[in-house]
Image (spheres, rainbow, N blue to C red):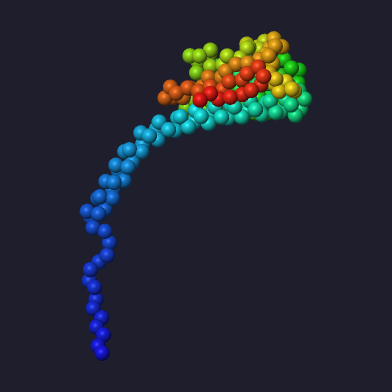
Length: 181
């Protein structure tokens, strides 16, 4: 019995035509995906900002109940401030941040890159102003809201992204918080 070892001189690999076809397919897929992604990302950031605001309202309400004191959310809709909104324990119940009051969180819209107040609607926030002229709402220890006048507070925060898509976060006098849609 004779075994013959024949060398195979063919080289394995891809032909230039196969490489060109794969590159063309990747190019077509990228051309389709980029426009979708450029629309999706700002909308994602807008939804994320609204959900975070919703969560911070809930956090203020829970903190007020837990600590048996008012917890206030104050807005700074003018550019250049240290925060766009602040959540803090309002020890003196005046809906104004005073030195020494415990800050729960400060949020800047710039962390979401393409989100800001929708100033075409009530300057972006339609809560009653405190004595400093800033929109603010407090949550009482019973979970209900309070405005600067001592009455029930309510209002809406309007948000917009760079693609002009808008959303809002609504707080009712009963302390219910929701994102419509």
